[in-house]
Length: 344
Image 1 (tube, rainbow, N blue to C red):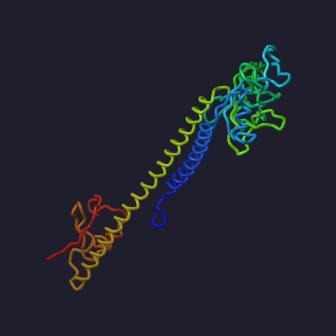
Image 2 (image 1 turned 120 degrees about the horizontal axis):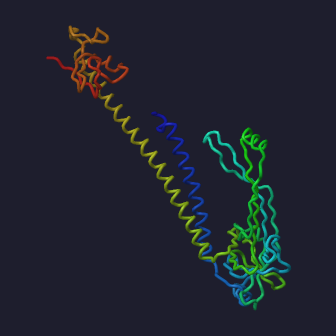
Image 3 (image 1 turned 120 degrees about the vertical axis):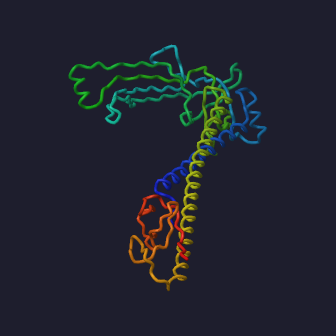
């Protein structure tokens, strides 16, 4: 304890708290930087003024912009196999298997799922203006966006039928298939889309929205930019407070260790003062004859201690220091301290 002020549990708690605090603070700073970039980015709509805005900037690209428009395919759109009237530019088909797995610890069946099949289809599309008077802005590499802006347009669960032999094997193996969930998600034609990224002008004069070359976040979302910004601010605030809580836990552990070390130091100082006081007493009374009332432990040295608070006089100082526990050998009461016995 003198060399290492923390117990094993405190060291683990302190290390994990500091590590999680650093991780959560990093996530907070990452979200805060994205929020700051979005707040400072130009807010644009798809219209005929975009080329002039790029020309006024003195370059063929704007590093980070917020662009709002309507989704329109460049050529033929994707048609939903389940709803022929629905057309989109991005389609994701997912087939998941749901099953019950026996949890031996909880003594119950828990639901689990796994993806059996996932297909992703996309066609080139642009962000157009609502009146379609101006040319569109091509959206490049939409699959690299942080979160795909897809809507669920079809969902069906096919329950698996079981026979008696199947049920018996399920209980023996600890797994019971429930069925398959089939889901279709699409980015529909005509949806209002907000894109946040780099706006560039190609050599042929067409415009495109692409992932930022400076590594900033690339967003495609169905809600407006204020809603996206609010969500990012909430996430940043959550990570900040989580990092603060972990830091407070680490501070409590350090404070607790310091208080314990201070108490131990005070106790050692009191013991050292008592030892010096008894040694001084022995030097001053070493020529005296051994009194008849000898120590009840060693039966050789005189009784030199008054045990407090019980007040018994039964030990020499060396036997007092050698006690296995701090209790009086006469009445078994706890010993707070011992003072030298001076006899006239």
